[in-house]
Length: 109
Image (cartoon, rainbow, N blue to C red; front, side):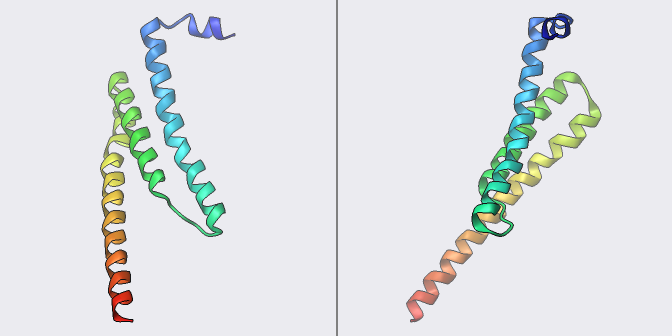
């Protein structure tokens, strides 16, 4: 089965397909990590790793889409990378604010 399906592709194309699949796996991993973190916390949680896998998966899929010259796929993936980076920046800013608030509360006691 695989040989008849893969036989229609060159070695280079197979490498690109595997590259695309690796991006899809990374992108899908974010949901598994988010589910695991939420189960562990017994509430909905979006861990930092969710955004990292989102960025990695979207970048790989964007590169694959550019190679395939698929404008729908490119438009669906590439802009998201910037949103994911922005979410990481917001998370870091909020973490710094929380640390400063906790430090101030500890000092006032």
